[in-house]
Length: 373
Image (cartoon, rainbow, N blue to C red; front, top):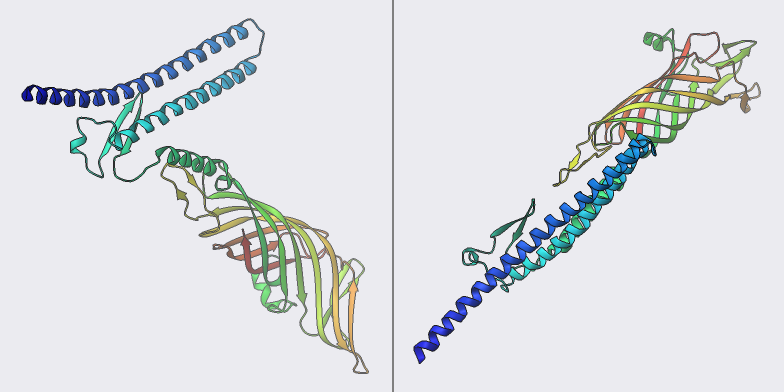
């Protein structure tokens, strides 16, 4: 009797173990079959709708453009249905595997698994991998978090094609005669005391949808150009000409300032290292490496004035501000370029049209430029 009882208990244990194994495999097969049914049903429904759209097109009820748009809409709808319904089955599979991890369902290979073993399951045309260890893993939450992060990267700030920058530049300002750099040595203006200042905003648009290194940069800026004369000289308007003459008193300051509004346009090569995620998505990092820009500008002068400071015959200090355009060209255009690292660049700007009418005197500026995201 005792032997019979032991045999019965042993048979019952073997039967229970086999049921658990078959239950796990059976549930996996059910999920696999369900995923295949969902995919097949949605594809069949899509085919029926496409055929119906083609028939309407043949009858002349709709145009080809309308037919193409309708096909895109139904394809998008059924793709979403497949994604949503398959996602529910994936969640059921996650629960099933978690039960297996917790020892509620046993497979024949469980005795060979250690803490870092990985089981692979093929469901439909998709393969799922799960780590079997002693840690509490919430695969469903990890999947949702990964999807949200991927969607944020593709649709959010990191994938913006256009960014904006605050621009500030300053440096030295002077003129060239007849496009000759050698004329700087004979310039009537002080080199280090003639300054320019520029402030504005720019927008930087990537030329491709995917991450790249080429951008189109455009914006709006305001420019203050200062020219200080040498040798106790000042500007005098003489009809249609502007002459540079010696001032009768001892000049402390002789400065001609013209203010203009510019629209800068550049192609920029930004060689900042891009970031690549595990899912293969790449987004560009800007202003974090070597940069170079080449382009030009067009602008209009907003005002011109001359500042004079001197001592008169009675040794009284006099300050004068003379408002006049001094025959300067109102519209301005030229070339500009910069090269630098991160937000700081060396900046060169050259006017193509003359500074004064009926002359070959052209403004040139060199300095530092900051482009701050």
